Length: 239
Image (cartoon, rainbow, N blue to C red; front, top):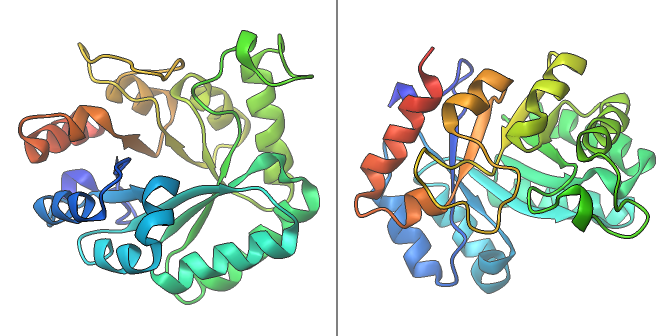
């Protein structure tokens, strides 16, 4: 459905399949076929049945591999290429991988994008962190400043796609107007926030400059997942 796709035909909602059973993930993706949604696969599923599952899920919508690669540049490049070869359209790396790795990932993205749409999304500060719970040496720092600094470092290296909380989306959009921003930590009004700290509603995330959302529990735990997903898409896309 067009309401679930952006101007360039990319999904505006990624369903976070944060599950342990590949068969359940496949069944959910199949039930959402034709909605225009994308599907995010994290380490829980990738370590169980990654290669086969990416190919299977890709039959139902664009796949977003979310393993947040943080390693030496050559290993990161090999991992990104492997995801592309499996059929993924999006993959994540970590901004803390440093300037050399970020430049290399931008070059790999540009190369692979000549074949088909492919985005390397850079993660900055996880949405489970607050200033008080940041890692050593960062604890007590302003989260927004850290996110902006890490994103600008990646942008300088050629990266244009980022994962950030909706609380930092406006700040990044102002600093980098052409950035493609994917925001997790989305909870429709009335939903429990779980272990996410920096959360927001779909409409507020859109107003802040988000290009797409990652949504897990509000869809996975709904009695009618298809209806819940499409309602969130409508909330996000309403002007």
